[in-house]
Length: 294
Image (cartoon, rainbow, N blue to C red; front, side, top):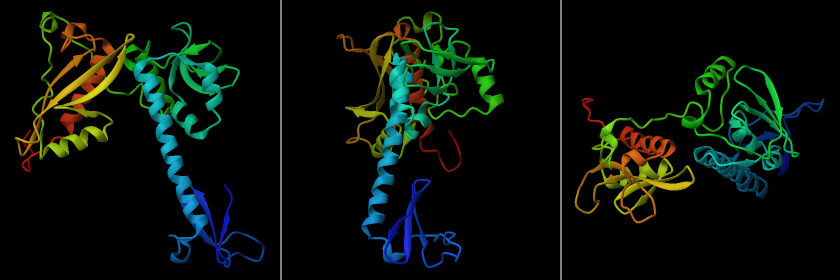
């Protein structure tokens, strides 16, 4: 983006998401740019050019967050995404930052790799876990949740060796797998992360919403699409009207079919992992006593 005149003495531009100014008067005789100011001079802070650039910067931040959130939803839900759509949004820097190096899977498990380019025709360029470049053009691809990713450990090793950094956390997203055995057959609640203490209900609810979850009644909830159905994971929370402090309760899962809670044995791998991720994140934000006791 070029520089815009802001009065007679300064020019302004958007640089790395921030509005910066430079002095026109400080330009050298050969036309080289003047020195940039450390902060916006007070005399131009209310000028329309500055305000418009600031609003544009705010919009760019919201747009980037929306793009990342959409890619995260595609990944958590493992939904099929049209390759033509990826090609159309790829020229947008915010979309490209969210999509680059996300692991996608084509029509076959062998068609797995880090996304490096997408053409509007639907052709994708991937780099596989062996470092080989692959071109493919399926109608749709998925961006699997890591608990569903084939060859996950190979992908992680390649990413570590080649310095891959994903705009949306996928291969290094923390995951949990449902334990087997008879203990989960009839049980409906996980208590591993229950009992996390917060200074107040408001601190607990603020922690939940900052993580992207919602408050519904006396629970923190997150909705997850798993194997074609929407499952609601919920962590109980204490009553704001009867307690000074607040605590997290157990974790349970439900679906909209009339049953209150699903038996743990019926929870799919993605719903289990994402529910445990929510409970663990709420537990991590608890109030820690000054002496460090847990």
